[in-house]
Amino acid sequence: MSYSKEDVLSKARHDLARRLGVNERDVREGSVEETDFPDTSLGAGTEDEMSGQMLTRGWRIKLQANNQTYEYRADKNQVRLYNFKGNNFLL
Amino acid sequence: MNRNNFLIHIALAIVLILVAAFAGQLRRWQQEYKHRVRILPAEEKTRKAVTTAELGETETHTLTAPEVLVKFKPGVSESTIRAITERFHDRVEDSIEAVPGLDAIDDLDDADAVQTAAAYQALPEVEYAEPNYEISIDDFESNPVTPSDPRFSDQWALANDGQRGGTRGADISATTAWSVTTGDDDVVIAVLDSGVDYTHSDLEHNIWQRPDNVPEYVDDSTGPIQDLQGYNAIMNNADPMDENGHGTHCAGIIGAEGGNDIGITGVNWKVRIMPLKFMNRGGFGTTKDAIEAINYVIDRKNNGVNVRVISASWGSTNRSQALGDVIKKAGEAGILFVAAAGNASTDNDRHPHYPSSYDLPNVISVAALDRNDQLASFSNWGAKHVAIAAPGVEILSTWLGDEYKESSGTSMATPVVAGVAALIVAKEPRISVEELRKRIVTSVDKLDSLKSKVTSGGRINAAKAIGAH
Figure (cartoon, rainbow over the protein chains, first blue to last red):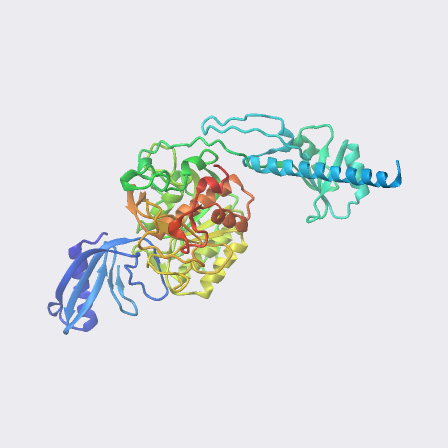
């Protein structure tokens, strides 16, 4: 299955709401920008993770909740919460 | 003649003999390096112009050498050896000190070397006997070879004619290399990645299949696995099908079938790609699964599979001692480990990237170049810890769904180097892993753009690496 821009945005909102324990309606979309990431972990690999060293086209998604901004990174295969230690991806 | 004159004449004679001997040795050295690499029984030395029409090869052999190499069993005395050789009307030309009992034997009748070796082999005193194969390096009048693959003109890494704003000649000189060899399906390269789409029509004929005489893989903890064409370390099963595309892309760079009128060609037209899957649909995996997959490769090598190279287009900044240890074991098994330098635009000497930064004799770290011989903007570098650079920007290769795609990264540069390693092995099957690594890094095209960026200071050159100029 290959994710579209709408798919990954929806997944990111759902994931952030779940992590913060808030309603999805309280997660606001900041911006969605198409960009290249440095590797197949979208430059957001976690410890003990090896990733393919291939530039990967995807989306940088900024979401806002609880007066803070969170960055998600996504491509057609995955959605990741950037700058987060621990399990940060959805396949 | 008085005593003084006599001594002067003696001294002159000695000098003349030494000069003549030195000149003779010079001539032998000259011959050794003037001949391109070919392997033939030495007794065929007078044969001339064997032509491989398809590749435009020609060769001439001129050398003097003993016909057979014979290893006598321990305990066989010199007098016995002398008696045997005299009986065959041969003579021992040289003894190889490093291997006790091994002698180079000259057949004074100039009989067929294969038959002579067989005659020695039949003796109870002999452990083994073989024709003395000539290995020499010729000045090669190259006839560049172009494959019939319709999208070859888009493969600037192999033949850069300035397409799409590139620099003519900023490539790996593949077409010249192919005038010597296009690869060998006896050579196996492990693609340690997200697996490989082994059904891709440009790959399927170059996918490794476990031969009947190689036993199935046995995982110590889970038991036997019917590994028909590789290994999946994530699921610990026999299906390494790629779900991401990254591994399929790397495999095509190494060995998409050449000359088949389909798509592209790999650095090798023919080779055996061993698909290994440790990265998932997202294109990432764990250190533990990478270790499991390398362990599989070593096991297959120890069971007789001629796997000589692991291509590793992945990494992270986390150092694992266990991963380093298993890569070292692969080196001890005679396997070269080619690794991506990374895509963070950083100096690996300051910020190491693994596995490419392991200081191991079988590891080659690879940076990426663009079509103008410039270090790619994303590529890591390292004067001490990145060995070489190779094309890695806008590289066309195979993709999932029988498709093709251009991708960029040190991931793409890595299989170029792995592919050239396989070409060298195809040409010189007995080359050691140390010699293989040395050959690759010492045969580069030096580039100003790579000064103080990579250890070799250059871009890989397939033609030079296999002795085609």
